[in-house]
Image 1: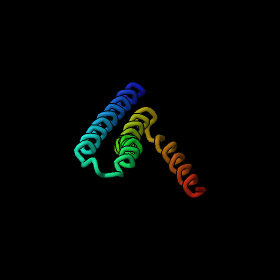
Image 2: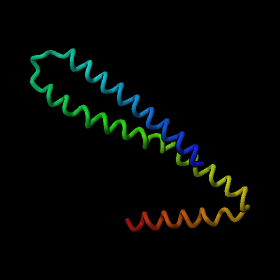
Image 3: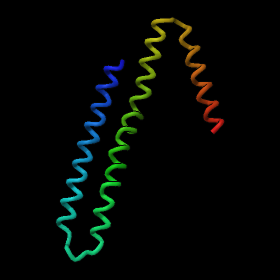
Length: 105
């Protein structure tokens, strides 16, 4: 399972780096084509890094949105194959703990 996690995170960070590079290149190119008389270019260039970091960091969460339920489904299936019907008990305990943490917050 850890091998697949390693492959998954490598692909996630690879796609985030690709998107980050593309965003920076496009923003830089569009900034170069703007008129030089605009005085607020320095503000726009300063914000590029922060905005691009937010977008590239959100890529990780976007992929985890679909990957986490898939991982839980596979783990549940493997647990059911190994221990039979008693696989329901850990799921109930986990759901109860999650609901208690949510109620406490």
